[in-house]
Image (cartoon, rainbow, N blue to C red):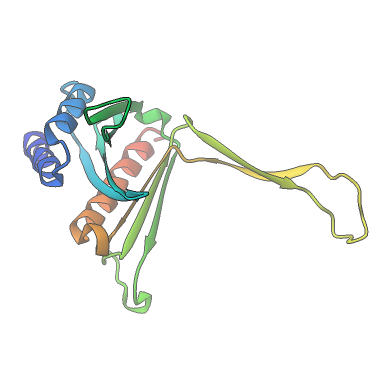
Length: 194
């Protein structure tokens, strides 16, 4: 697919999400800065916050040199803000900064799964070092009678962004789109190490 055809399809998918499409497209266009589009994902998520429905959209766009992450959130009117508002934020990450692309797939009836087959759910986690999480717990030895201080043990993980999609909630097309995006991003990050 040509860059202009891919950009046109991206715009259609943003429109189809129905979530402030002009705002989402405007923010993304600024971040893309006329760079050609390689791959993308549009993920619309609805969630309940107490008794309110809140919406959120994430657009991931891959160019030859950057990963663009765009989030748009809505904010309902309240006592301090009499009019509803929305925030569209973009982050542009140089491809050489992406150091982790994790794809977790859930497949039903795994005995029948064939290469290239569908997945019921996909979680794409991308890390580039902006957010790190450290989980610590007290270290212990094997002696149940020991009361010495053994310090701490733990794990550090780099998970700046996670996107979860499922066939049931988002449709098979979106699941396939996330897998294709993950493959394109992995290919881009692998190309820089060759």
